[in-house]
Length: 37
Image 1 (cartoon, rainbow, N blue to C red):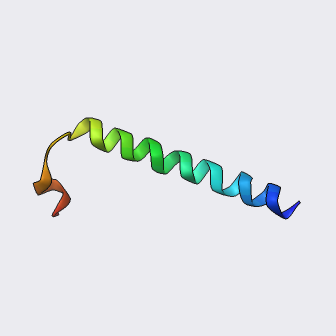
Image 2: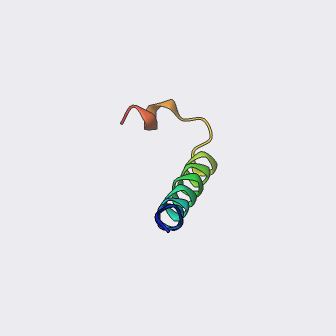
């Protein structure tokens, strides 16, 4: 049961991180100045 709870908790977070990373890359494909912020 613990593994199921861990998966249910971590999978949505991982998805949000991946989606956020993809959106960030799409919005600013080549802007190193933004990363230094």
